[in-house]
Each structure stands twice: as C-alpha cells, then as structure tokens.
Image (cartoon, rainbow, N blue to C red; front, side):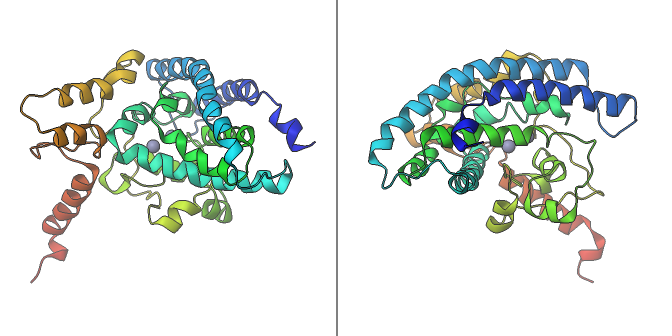
Length: 310
Ligand SMILES: [Zn+2]
Ligand SMILES: [Zn+2]
C-alpha cells in the first residue's frame, strides 16, 4: 500500500463505524464484565449528537482549512514526496502542532469557547470523545498547519494526519483501561494520561495536552501523572448543568459577548475578555486556572500541620 492509497481512504467513515463498535464494547465491558466506568444515557446522547453533527460541519469547514493550505502550497521551500518516512515525519510534526493548538485552546478564551464543549461532560467514556464543537476551523488555530505545508508536506497529507490523530484520541476516553505497559505510557498518550487532562482537580488543570505522543508534555513541562489517591473529577471548574447540546455549544460564546458588551470597560479590557485566559476578569472577581492552582497550593501549605513551622 502506498501513501497515496492511504490518503484515499475515507477515514471518517471507517472511524465512525469503529467508534460505535467500540462504544458498544465499552458498554458490554461495564455492564457485563463490571469494568470500571459509566455511560449515563442523557449525557451520552448529548455527546453523540454533538459528535454526529460536528462531523459534517467540520468536514465542510475542513475545506476552508484545506483551501488556505493549498493557497500556501506554491510558496513551499521544497516539495516532499509521498513516501512512508515523510508521512511518519509529517504525523510527528503535526502532533506537535496539535499540542500547541490544544494548549492555546486552554489558555485563550476565544479558542476555549470552542474547546470547552469537549470538556463539558462530568463523565469520562468513549461517547465523550465524540463531544466536539462545530467551530474548530473558525478559531484561527488551524493556521498552525501552514508551517508544515511551507516546509514541504502535501496539504492533503497534513489534513489526513490531523484526522488520524483525532481518531487515535477517541480510544483514550475510557475508564475501563487502567494503565498500559510502562514503555507505552512513557511515549504515547494513554487513557490514564488523558483522564488527567479531563480532571478539574486543581493539580490536573492545564496538564497533558498531547494528541498521540505524550513526549511533548514531558518535554515542555506540562505532564502530570494520574494519582490513584486523587482520582480525576471530570468536567469544568464550573459545570454547565445542562444536556442541551445547543446550550453547550454556545455557552462560552454568549459569555464572551456578555462580557465584551459590559458598560465602562476600556478597549483593552474588552479585548482581554476575548483573548485572555478563561476566568480572567477586569476586577479580579473570577479565577483563572493559574489562580486556582496557586490557591490550592496556598491552602495546602497553611492547612497541613506537618508543613507548619514549629
Ligand atoms: Zn483539552
Ligand atoms: Zn478528551
């Protein structure tokens, strides 16, 4: 099989069939074999609805990204061939691109408004993997793919690597798998590492942004190992309390609009309500993830008698 054959596969369709087969397998594992995990009906219906609807919307808008990448293609510094080594290199570099995109998604409110949809479930199961926003091609972070095309990779190959990466991440969303072999946990993103990423516990915030390779978190200082003594509490710092997919999709955008239109703000403050980290406020009345982590550390220091000076 050549790379050209591979790029011709309808990976979206293949993935969809595999996703539902895996969700059925997860249900059997939990209900019949008493594996760890839960798949609550209402929450999962909301996740699957968001996923099924995001597929065509994202597929159509992917053409927007592909169009921009094709416009950049004539300015490539070289043209790399469609070979397996080039494909593997493209996948690894695109995985780093995903890490950067994901980190921005948690630190810039405009992008978080899109990405928080994925984090809005208080459960952790395979349907949660499908809980995706419909606006990912409109946040601007897809422009991070441009350097890959300029470096010589084919825009179709770059797009395909992104889809393949997203498909790998589907399998991370489960509690039924505890730990994988040590060497695998060291190199690859796993259910354990990604459970941490979905945890709203202070110590798990802003950790494990990886797509496929966990090495990026280890190299860039954002890796946190899952602690069995402190299991992840899934969801958002302030949960939405709704299963309505449209309210989930629009929640943060409405919040941004409301904040930007407040009376008496400076232009810079209005901009900060769009681009500052989630939880930023002009009067300090809200908490960012950095504030939450700092407060948690302070509480830990002052309330633990063992750390108090004699
Ligand atoms: Zn995330
Ligand atoms: Zn996830």
